[in-house]
Image 1 (cartoon, rainbow, N blue to C red):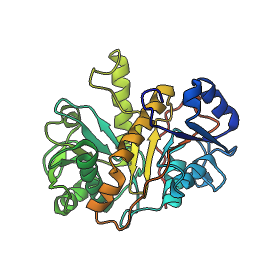
Image 2 (cartoon, rainbow, N blue to C red):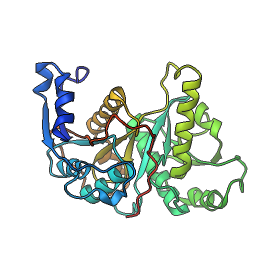
Image 3 (cartoon, helix red, strand yellow):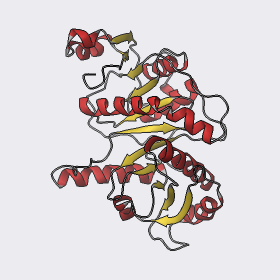
Length: 313
């Protein structure tokens, strides 16, 4: 909050968790924090349908829907967050499975990777829809001109990969993309690190999540991330009618702060509205009042990095 004096927080969660956070702030910052005490939290191992109306994550989504907050940030169960956002905010037309999108630093510029944990077993049509979402997000959130979209596989030659990749390749090639984006075909893992062939890389949520954690582990073994930044600890949720950011399951204070900063950046750029307009989605989300930060009872005490729960809606 020190870095963003215009930011206001709505903390949703157990009162004792909120009190501990507020106690670390100075009086001026405390004036910009509101608390909504909610006891029920969805655990990491629970079924996402546990994101019922009286849970912290569902209450945070409702605050955004009702105009009490501009964006929602959660470091709890990814599956529960996606479920709560889809049910509480609604999905865009023609988006059956929302996608989690992360931005990785690359030699030639940022590379947008999706999905990183929202849909573990998508079909070719879902990957094609995610390519559309990713292209629009790269243009709106990062100012990429004419984004190049690639499909992650084990080789760049046509026909490489498993059944999903072989089926999805022609589907993506035929899909109309927004923002003058173009499909460049199959790409490999090192293309994500270089950024020379693609600005947007599409894959299934299982592979994307494993890749993200592998990159994070590689940075840790190398003594830390490069100066340009490391693996992101927060991802934006695309395909729902609101700004939603999901933090890493093992997020610490600085990681949650990074997620809040991402959510504020996306809302101030009207990213959700702009992407929805580019995709022809009617309506949009109007301005509201602040940031809803969902805080489960387990926040800050995660030992497993769980951001890989698929949600069937």
